[in-house]
Length: 200
Image (cartoon, rainbow, N blue to C red; front, side):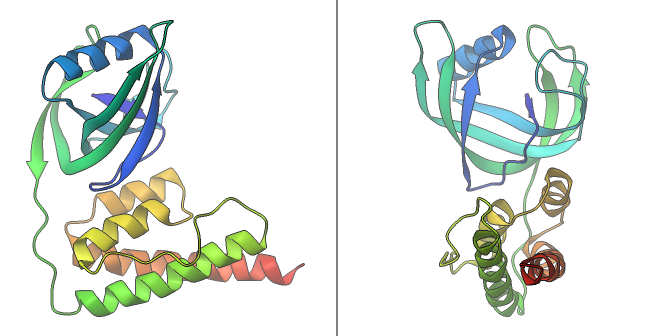
């Protein structure tokens, strides 16, 4: 398990810079196996040094690119595979371990395509406002996947939200609930960003 200060969503890529000895060992172990490990959000504490408080629902990640640097650090590209829930944390020896259960998403409902379209509109508006404010953001011309389930994770990853809001999205039961939460969360974010933009 690799506790982080950010949330990884299924189907979404994330770069990782691995420098702590315990996570170098985790990387080597994963590369010698199937390349998979769990990613969970750190609720309180730091990524470095241990002693953190972790959430219990995260994402199984798969290493798709790995480069070892001369000093032993690793540069990785990982992709989220599926959601997992921690059943039990095991001792952090030499790195965090846990027993996990895979969580499968239920199929999207009849209204999911309409919700997906609403999410895409709100996301584009939020990203455009972020750019207008001179803040880092993905391109406002983003096009989400036609599959509402895939789109819900893409939007969650691209939305200008904090880690705890992202975690709430990851914890939703399925794509319908995730899209509904995205609509309400992005609508509120757009209002805040628009207000800030109006101040000049």
